[in-house]
Length: 101
Image (cartoon, rainbow, N blue to C red; front, side, top):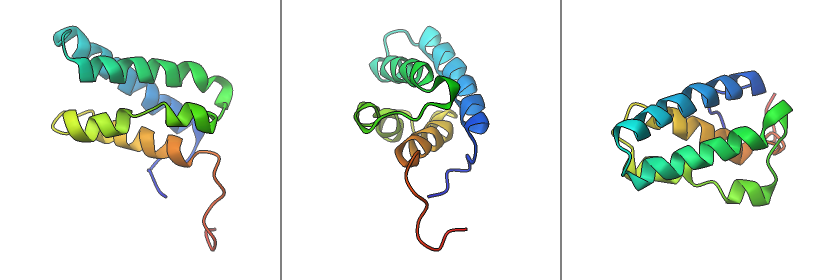
């Protein structure tokens, strides 16, 4: 599955900018539970993935920020970044599909 992210460095850079954008959104809308949940999950993801560590399946199962983005934040500019991050995390560590170069 292509997310547009092909390296850990790209993932890490997108995670950093997305975390900053979501934190700013939360400061503007402190009572928004969806944004607060996404911020907590992105912070946890950042801590989990230091030095390129792939999250365990149990850790992956605990992230639902992509779902929250699709249901609650789809009209925010940050939504596409959240989808890309969620897709990358889901497929991270999986073998490439057959026939993929």
